[in-house]
Length: 118
Ligand SMILES: [Zn+2]
Image (cartoon, rainbow, N blue to C red):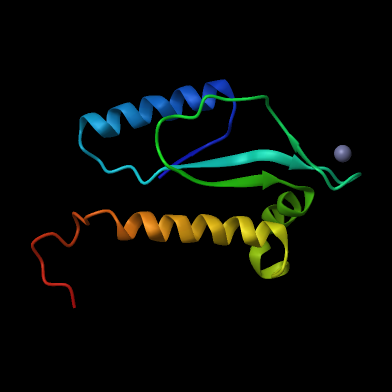
């Protein structure tokens, strides 16, 4: 799973990692866009932090916004999903978790290959 912000430099690193993983046959579940947009504390709108980007050619797993609530909770070490069980942040993380679970279900596991799974 590749996690990247949408800045050019981060995406260059992500593309480099994807290229290396493909060369050595490491399965790639997809990419998570971290700090994909900023949820404004004034108007509540999700403002894009950057303009249109060229996504690497891997499945999209999710976009986690940057919010003041997330920043404060992270600084305190509190899981934002537990603090705001009905909020947009929780939905973003749950959507991401569901896509990761689906991608894992479609990916053969090297860890269990040739072994009996209890
Ligand atoms: Zn605003």
